[in-house]
Image 1 (cartoon, rainbow, N blue to C red):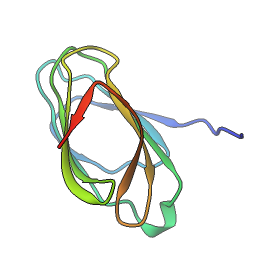
Image 2: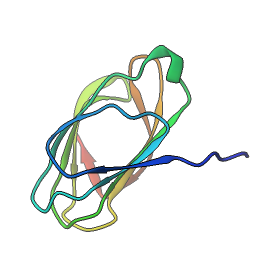
Image 3: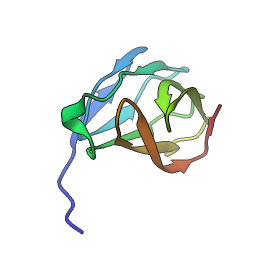
Image 4: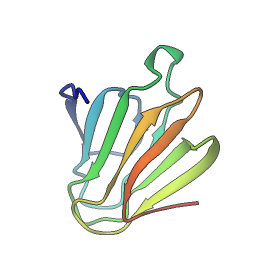
Length: 101
């Protein structure tokens, strides 16, 4: 399997997450409220990695596995999600201590 390097982005505030083909590290010291934008059709199959760099219960809201959902991170460094862009949704490939409802 061929892996391509991901762009690394730092997320230190609440707001929208739009990167595709990126690794996002959340550095906000308190709970970050983040919203995932719908992946564009041109990005199907691309990866988005979201990792907590702080011990806070961050939330990510958006279309996950075809449904509107919120992922709440356990309050520990290193928790996160690996997502793949699908058709109008993000597909959860890996989940480390994130509760999705």
